[in-house]
Image (cartoon, rainbow, N blue to C red; front, side):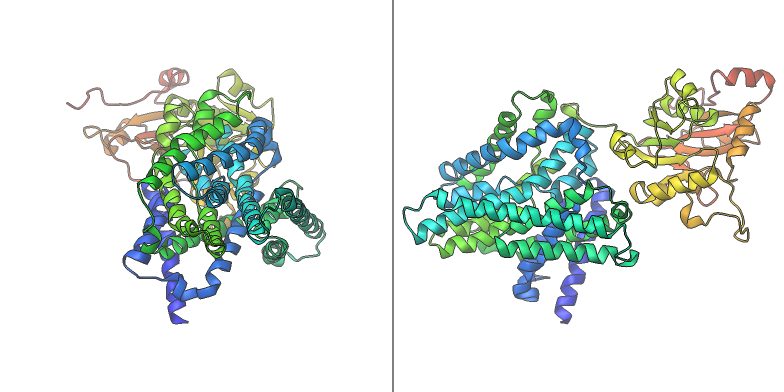
Amino acid sequence: MEQQALVIATIGVLGIGAQWIAWRTGWPAIVLMLAAGFLAGPVFGVIDPEAAFGDLLTPMVSIGVALILFEGGLSLDLRELRHSGAAVGRLATIGVLVGWALGSAAGFYIAGMVWPVAILFGGILIVTGPTVVIPLLRQSNVQTRPASILKWEAIVNDPTGALCAVIAYEYFRKVSDSPGASVFEVLPPLFGAIILSGAIGYVAARAVAWAFPRGVIPEYLKVPVLFTVVIGVFVACNAIEHEAGLLAVTVMGIALANMGVTSIRSIHPFKENVAVLLISGIFILLSASLEFSDLEYFNWRFGLFLLALLFLVRPLTVLISLLGTSLPWNERLFVAWIAPRGIVLVAISGLFALRLTDLGYADGNVLIGLSFAVVVTTIVSHGFTVNLVAKWLKVKGDSRPGLLIVGSTPWTIDLAKQMQALQTPVMIVDSSWQKLAPARQDGVPFYHGEILNEATEHNLDLTPFQVLVAATENEAYNALVCNEFAHEIGRDSVYQLGDHVDEDDRHALPPSIRGRALFESGFGVTDVNQRQADGWVFRKTTLSDEFDFEDAQDKLPDASHMLMLIRESGRLRFFTHAARPEPRAGDTIITFAPPRDRQASAVTDVRPISPEPTEKPA
């Protein structure tokens, strides 16, 4: 018992630690998790999942994969298919058949597998997997359409690849028992089981969508009930047919995401946290379970097979599938390159390796080591090149952190113009077309719509924006916006205009539902609007080794209030009542300041003064 507890704690530390290092360094998290598990398992022997969990290891991993696929399905909104539906549909149909055929051929002719093993492994290779694709996209900031295509393909093709392997295995098992058996004797029962499993997943989603809004389930039990239903659906459908449960939970997730259940939206932060924990834990478990004996079959032919998988099988699959579509060639090539494999490939390969061995196919043993080799090769190759390839093919989004401003006022429009001048992506969102008129006239990017409307997250790409400022004339609404987006952007990255009041003020909004207050003085909407009317302007000051923070303060009027500083990397740091960032050389400080005199006011209304050093460092 103590050993199992120690293994669980170690897995948690390694998995989340790898995720944290990836966040700090920008390296692919999956690569770090694989390395951590491999070092802790076969290299140093710190943990041995097989010894700790025994027969429970396989069902633990299977249920974890099912929950990850369900969570991925919940993130798929059918409205995304307006721009990428044709490509996703082709990759999920033509791509499956072409990829299966090419993968099987590579396994037989290049890796030297016997046909049954090559065909089964070719089916498994169809999967790319949300467990690796989604973290990769999160770190690489790819444009919306190619990112959407890769995400949909990963989630849809994960259960498809598993079912292809099931079809191949059942056929060869049938042939082994009854030589000369036809494929038509195997497929109808399998397709019947697949259709039934999909129907069970859809019915489960319908039941949840009916029960949650009607108060049948209390709020505190909704998440436990939902996850219990997912596990129950997975286990029941697996009893009908091996791995059919993966299809059922994927269908359940996608169906539930598109039924407009408001309760589902409220559990998004929790399910995302669970997904991170599961992905971290399962990757550590699987890589720590690898044994050096699994690699003894590896030879030069397998090396050529991995190269063929990277440079022939995947590119040809995508390019053939997308022939005749309107997708630009740069996006096709990007999708053709990115295909990292993950948990499902390893889990299913390990399962069928044992079954193929029982059927008398000795090559079945090679699938365990080869599947890990595929995972490591694709994750390293794609993880470390995704940014480079995206930049080369011009499918990369804005690299500098962007600012999303809620509320169109003279103050926010001037702030947005400052951000534009500093090459920071910026967007003003407002539900009033009239209030957006000055922004339109000044060429400031804008979105007309209600930021809290669920449709907005599908019509407006929020990916470039890492910071949100709510600055409408309603401070309670600003707090509501900040609270809504805190889980997505980060509690430390949502700000609002609003007075910093005493805790004894019974009319004050609780700090837990507010954004961080802008300015050290906690200026409210009325404050900035009045000062704006009095001629206050934004000024930018760039610091250097010769012109430091104290020099900048001396150049500014005494009543100036510093709003933010922008690092050389583009990172935005705000001055608030609770935090003051430390300025350093290379930073640009944005200050809200009064005019020095009436003449200066007339000038700065047109072009704000930028008190920068007149001499450059040598």
